[in-house]
Length: 306
Image (cartoon, rainbow, N blue to C red; front, side):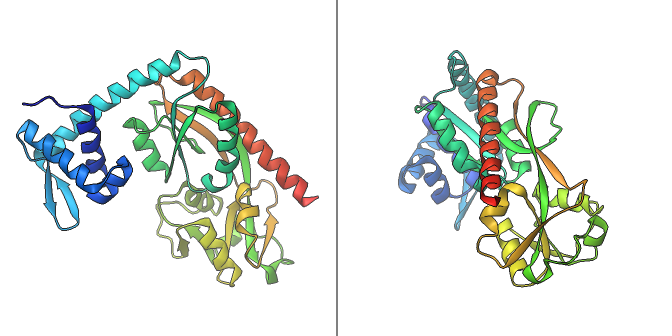
């Protein structure tokens, strides 16, 4: 067997994750022919076929599935060695792989990334935006260093640090602006627009309406908060928004925004990472920056409303 290299293993992992040569090559910042060549070299080196090629999709062989488990463990160990070296520094530097849920990312990231870059210009920030279940799995697998999510996630292997809370507001058509603000029970009987399954914000909205997430939902669904607000603007129904999203999402829609009577629905935002991560001290620095960025957004909203 020829010597295996980390480069071979990283390219293999990318293809195993994306199951598509084009997307895997893009993720690795190389050309598709170059990726194909590396995978072929790997298969020749170990004398086994790792992928079934067919049409536009590729699949792992049975051996490839077993191989993938070992490769992830090897790459995670290498990443932990890199983390250990970074942890020896007083200040977070180098690569930071941070996950963010979609109902936070567009609103917090512009301020947060700027603040992190001012903290350390050498910080190499990689952002992954996706729903909480995927972020949890990618943290477990070592593909992320940390994630900003709605708490709790209740994963025993994670450290959870609460950072700030924010209320939800009601978004409805302009024509309904003078109507009484409904409570959760009243919303159950209205055309309530929700995010599709997989988004924690959907579950939080259902909880406010006293609807179990497991119950079939006969209402309307969208793939983003922007879609929901635009649908409200043309009179389709009503929806909920986290406060940080209001300025961005309602600026181009004919909607009105109303606050709920206390206790208003809300969520707690925080950061999570593996308890075994050697970067805990540095990630606590990031927690401080996230908290400051969120406070800056709140101050901007307050100033704009005055």
